[in-house]
Length: 63
Image (cartoon, rainbow, N blue to C red; front, top):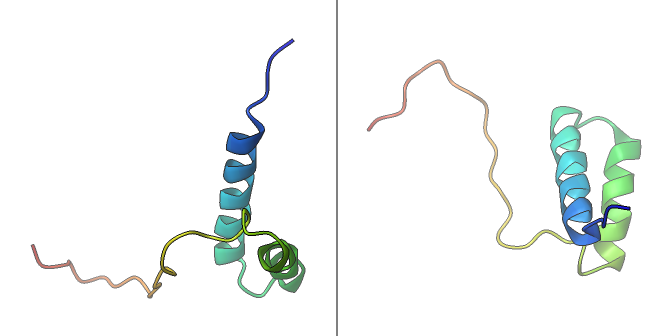
């Protein structure tokens, strides 16, 4: 029987949920599903500063 790395599985699951929430920003049920554990568990909260998102541009970035 295989051993499951539950911490890695949890990190991956949370990342996938947050990515899906980014693709579907109007999905209130998904936002609520992510938001509630974030308020109750320090392990579920993202680490580091919040990410800044912006729209894609057809222009090339300098550099």
